[in-house]
Length: 206
Image 1: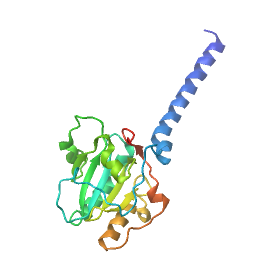
Image 2: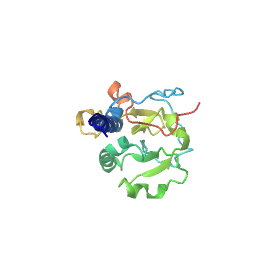
Image 3: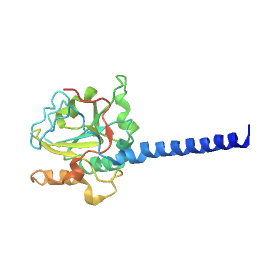
Image 4: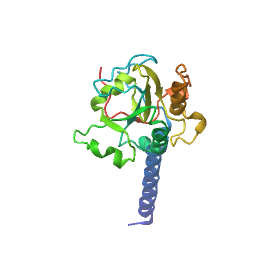
C-alpha cells in the first residue's frame, strides 16, 4: 500500500471516528434539548377538562392524583428519577402517585418496577398510549396532576433542566403546592407546557 493510500485510510478512520462521536453527542445531548415532535394525531387536552381514569386506576381515593409518565427505555425518564422520588417522599400523604409506563413489551414485568427504580408508587402500563392520549401527553417524562374530581390541573414538564436542578422552575412541584392551597391552575408558560424528552413508543392513533 502506497503512502497516499495509507493517508486516505488514516483520514477515513479519523473521519469515521469523528462522525461516530457527533452521532453519540446528538443522540445523548442535542436530541433531548429540542422540543419533542408533536404527533400528527395529537389532540390538546385543556386544563380543567375531566380525564376519565377509572378504566386505568381502580381507586376510590379522595386525594388528587399525580400521573408520572415514564418510559424505561428513555434516558430523559431516568434523568429526573431523583426528583420524582423527592416529590413522592414529600407529598405521598396528600397526593396519590402512579407511574404510567410507556412500553411496547407485552411481557414487561411491572411487579419489579418499584424495586428496580426505587420509586415506591403504584405502576400501570399504558399500552398504545391510551391514557397518554386522554391526558394530552406525547413524550416522557411528563407530569399530570388531576384534582379530586378528575379534572386536569397540570400537565407538563417537571423542570426546564433535564436533571431537575433548577429549583425556580420546579413546575410540577409548584403545581402540587398550588393545588393543595386551593388555588386556580397555575400558568407557567411555554417552558412548562412545551414537551421535551422522548417520543412515546408508538404514535398515538386517532
